[in-house]
Image (cartoon, rainbow, N blue to C red):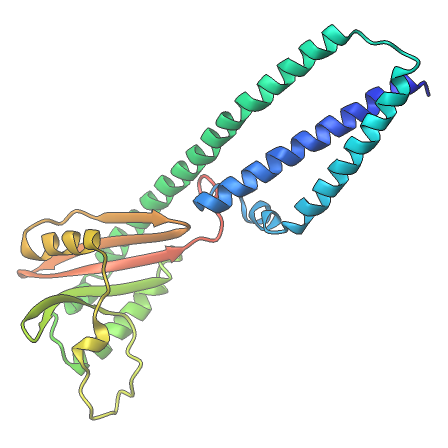
Length: 265
């Protein structure tokens, strides 16, 4: 094989390998830093094998080394058209630079579509669960802070959480007060001994909230506001679903965590 042909082959291999490596690292870093949920499970898991990236970098460096050494040898026997090569190089660099914003847009677009699809599925499932379990929902909304209601609520929520695969976790949020201070309580499981004579304490059920969450919950419990609130962040999906009955109010809190994502999941 002629040196010039060998140089061309090694150049092609080197450029393709390095370009793919750059794209791979860029996509991996973007997905990890921004917590995007775009790909199927096996691709996402492949990203976590970052050690392969290090090996690929070493391999890319080795290819570059061989490529430039072969080029130096070839240049002693062949004089290529430098102007044409420079022009091709500039075009390649421009294409490479322009492709990054395109990939970034596709990643964020895929994450947005995944989130919207997840939101639609969660809302549909929440409405279906409430409609199919209206009697249980009426028991939940009849809030009274005592052991009987808490244990009954825990049993109902366990059933609801197993009803739909999109809701592995279901809780009930209510508005209450402790020593004159308004706050929110959350109920899901009752971890104490049901035969224990010690009464439950409200402070054990306090729901820790952010300002945005408090603003939303206060608006629900203090007014007739009943809009659903959906939140998606780093694979955590949360749905606040207000439920009113006989002038009593609760907020059903559905949550799910998704390790990976794909459009239509």
